[in-house]
Length: 125
Image (cartoon, rainbow, N blue to C red; front, side, top):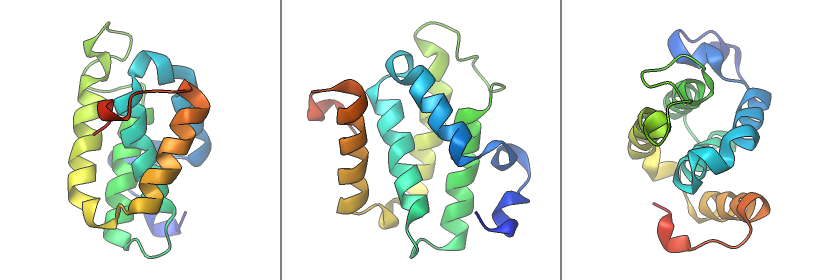
């Protein structure tokens, strides 16, 4: 991650690749497939060399919010605990959507298959 992105304020400071993987692995069943798919798409978009700096900072902020234990609705709250996380992830996807290509979606789905096994792809965004 570039130094400029690392020095970001707010939730961007919460982001690390290790933190993201740890969070997704620990909550993937509780958070649900849509939340994890959204986070994965942002992660793989961030990894692309041609994703511009502004988009990467947007992604880091959204993923940092997802990782952070402090957010609007505590993740331990049944059912709605990940609603705010999903809202932030969707807003970031809308902002950087032009950089989410077929390869990003394919990589995200492959990781979902690793974690969830077979799933109904109609459930995704």
